[in-house]
Structures are given as C-alpha cells and as structure tokens.
Length: 389
Image (cartoon, rainbow, N blue to C red; front, side, top):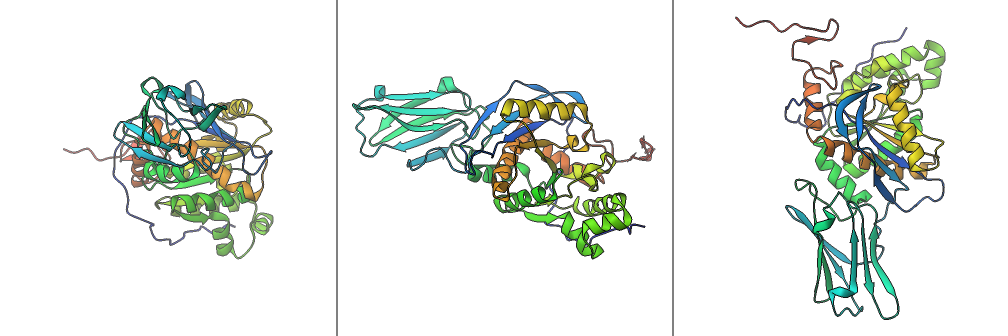
C-alpha cells in the first residue's frame, strides 16, 4: 500500500499579487528540429490565429500558435558589432560600419516585416549582408521603420507592436529569452511533462540556469523518500502507487515560486493521469513531446490534433515543444524553444501569471482556468461561502 507523501520544503520566495481575470487558456507551440546539427540556425514563423485549445475543446479566446524551428543558441549577427537601445515605443539598432565606405543612405537596403530584419549595403564589388534575422525579439510595425547614417554607424529605428514589452535585445536568443521571460513569469514556476523523465530533467536544469530558478526533480525526491528506484517501486506496489506519491510531491511544490520542476515521464507519473493535474496548474506546464514530423508545419498540425482530441493527459499543458530526436546535448535547444513558446503564451494574456497566483492562493482546487469563488467546493461543485446577513 502506498504511503501518503508530504515534503516539508520551504517557500522559494514571496507570493505575488492577486488579480482575477476572465481570460481562457491558450495554446503556444514550438517545434525543435535537432537532427541535422547540434547548433542549427534558427527562424520562427507566426501562423494564422487559432481558437485556443483547452482540455480537448475550443474556447472563445483567439491566440497565436508559434513555431520555433531549428532554434539557434547564437545571435544571427555573428561577429557584427552593434549597440541596442530599448525605448518606450521603439527600439534602436546601431551597426558599426567599420572600414566599409558608405556615402549615402541610398546605398543601404533594409527589409523588415513583422518579425524579421535583413540589412544589406551596396559596395562596388558586391552587395554585403550586414545582418539577417528571421526572429526579432517581438513583432514590429514594418511600415514605420526608418534608418540613417550617423558618422561610422548605421542607425535603424523599429516601432514596437507591443509598446509595453521590454526588449532585452534585437533578436530572440537564449540570452534575450532568459532575461525577458523571467520578467514576464513574475515568479511563476514551470512544470515539465512528457514521456521521458530524462528529457524533463535535462531541460529543467537548463531552464533553471537561464532563469535563475531552483531546479527540482520529482524522480529523485520520490526515490529519496522511498529508498528505492522508481522501477522497483512500480514493480512492488504498482504504477498507481507511484502516481499517487508524485501527486503528493506536486501538492507540496504547488505553493512554491521560481522553481523548474521535472516530473516523471510515462504513465506511472502523475502528469500521465488526467485526474492528477490539480496541482500542476499552479505553474506553467510545458509538454516536451517527441515527434516523427520532419518540418514545422506537420509538427504543428500534430500538436494541434493532440491538443484538440485530448486523448493524452499531456494535452492539458499550457505549451508544447515538439522535437524529432533526443540527445542530452540538445537540452539547451529545447529549453530555448520552451522559453519562446512561454513568451508567446504570456504575451497573449499578460495577466496569466497573476491568475496562476490566485489559483494557488485559493487552494489549487482544480478549477483552472475558470477559477471559481473562494467558497467553491471541488467535491460538490457548490459555493459553500456563508451568506452575510
């Protein structure tokens, strides 16, 4: 018989503010192809708006689905020297021209769309590409792009689509995402789910380093408590006992902030059971899902289908990251794809972190995303708040 598990772990930080919002959940998606090279190039595509998917059904909220294909760990500018400034409504990029001779701004070609930027200079011998990125940190208003020469610098001004968002850098990279998403999360923890405990653990470690969060792993916590391996526990007491014990661990962790939690992979873990997600909703959940797809479009369709039919409990996750092969050296690549998807999810509804905090304060009763009044009883579905006379 399984022993109920309670872990006496201290809080990792102060709770954040309370705000109840009426927004529904949405689906963000990243696809990470790592089969060709360990340091692939990167680009990101914004797909047409899709009705948000939650628990196998469409909600009324319209949110973007984002694909992150061949994520790069390095900015696309290579050795190009540039300065970047983030303003209230725009960003400014200053490129050092060095020995290049540029007499007029007419010799400069700047192509910008919603989230990409290409800068070229006409030289007597050839046209030189100074910078090319298919993934700016966020969307811009391409029609309002201006550029001019300032001594030995090319100055490019880009208008933000979201004037409230702070840009850590011009491109979406590991460094800019770890800084920017940290600000967006507002201390909310992250739970990694999926079929592989190893993938969850390795990616959690990378995310924790980038975000300066605390890495936690339910597998090691359970094995320390039970003094046996998960495999031995399953063999002796059954998968249900292990899932019940992990659910207790997740309950203990649900009130913590600034943590990245790697959950057990497979059906013997709590995340593999649809009825044991009550405490996972306390943080942002990322489903790390291996796919047979070879391109971002087919992987996107696969993710949408899985979330729509809801047959896998992992489809309850806030975001899904698809990858076509696994090696421990790919962990940072998947971590970057996870941050990219989380960024788009939170930008679709910036009140989500506060809503997660409210969910925790009301006791993680399983009513996510439609949080009920404080007196709501999850066992009966009835509001038990005493009436005031």
